[in-house]
Image (cartoon, rainbow, N blue to C red):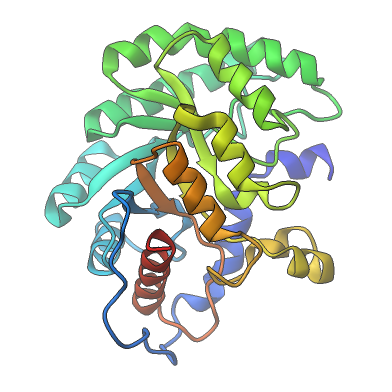
Length: 308
């Protein structure tokens, strides 16, 4: 994978590939019968940035709420007044905020100016989270590529994040590091060490289940990271589709039809006493299914997973 592809975030790829299904009429009904009751206190959210289509923010909130989600995850840098109006109109909780520039202005960049821009973006995200009542900001801390070495990425990102740990603590908002395909923090042991080196409860982990399946086993990461995990992204991944169609196509699979061992994942979450948010970041938007119907399907799939 080239450095240019690395800096293009996974979410940009997934949103672009999903657009074909949004405006089409539904040919599939949501499964009949009552949804399985959750046996865990994990709250069910939707990553708003993963919802495809050029839809007004208020309408996206409404569709997510009607599909049965309890909260949303929003990008930083949106109009705060619009976000607050949509939140209050639907009653949805804003669980977390995604730093919207962490892939473009990385905290590991060789350029001090780029790192400063990235730090300013993280600061905006922290203040957005405070304004919305969100308890964390999702952060990609660094990107390793041909021009940025692993050790430099580690050292630079630590220095930059430490500059705003105090601010995060004062705001009551945690900085939640996510495991992504950035060639950085490639093992759960190293990820745990990275968090611990900040020596602050204001820095924690946002664990993405699907991102691990390509190279490892999420349940192992969960047990090692333990109480450091503050938020979850629930995403499916298929090694079979990866092998047959390409690396990124592995995400294009229905929940419970990929290679996540969801019972093992849920057991691991029980073992570490996880009780936070489980936010959907789906990539599978089947052709011919209207957006409201698809959101309802995803909501029910998460209910099934959380009841395992």
